Structure formats: C-alpha cells, structure tokens
Image 1 (cartoon, one colour):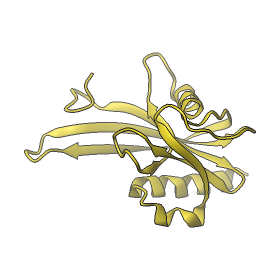
Image 2 (cartoon, one colour):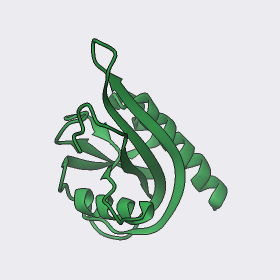
Image 3 (cartoon, helix red, strand yellow):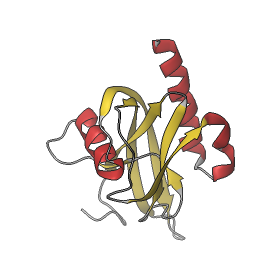
Image 4 (cartoon, rainbow, N blue to C red):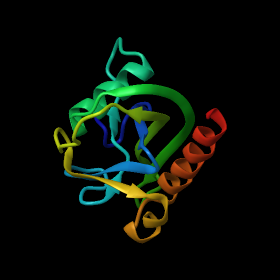
Length: 145
C-alpha cells in the first residue's frame, strides 16, 4: 500500500524509551520528518503485535533492547494536499519503555541517536504531539514506580 494517498491509515508504533531520567530520540534519516528529532518507531508489520513492533523498531533504529514496554496512547498524523485530499494518514500507537544496558547506535531510518533530559526537549523543534507524548510517558512512568 502506498503511503502517499493511501486507501486506509498506515499503523505505526513509536516508543518513548527511558534510561534514568533521560529519553532517547532519533534524528530521522528519511521522510516523513526527515532531519527532525523524533521518537524511534515505524510501521507495524503484518502478523506482528504492537509491543513486538515497538521492540523491533527500537532495536533496528538504536540497537537497544527494551526491558519493559507499556502501552501509552494513540496519535493520528493526517496531512492534506491543496485540494483537501488526504495525502497521508498514520495511526501511531505509542508506548513507553525502559532501555536495557548497552550503547545506542543509529541504524535503519535513524541518522543519529541521542539521550535528552526533559528540560532539553523544547529547543529541538519536536512535533507538538511528540512533546505531549513524552510528557505523558513521564507522568505514567512516575505513577508506575
């Protein structure tokens, strides 16, 4: 199925990955949002559960394994062209997770990976939904402790 002018939404997963009080972001190497900082994630594959997809995407883009994965929220990213037709529609299922030991290295669609403190996120030009999801993950993580 084409991602431009699709017949139905594309399901993707995103992961808010924590190590201590820092969150892992990737700089996207490909569209959508190429060159921007984002959560690791990508399209769910046929026959793959959501949590499985999150683990796979994080592994592919950062080389890290996850020790805990919890469902967080769902976000829709919908873009229209000049005629008002839906050019893209992603339904993004976000999780929060804890990273296992190891060094994060870019792979897959990630051009760069880096850990950030919550106080560093405002100046990165993140999509407003990404900021909201990271804050929500911080709240859920604190409540789970």
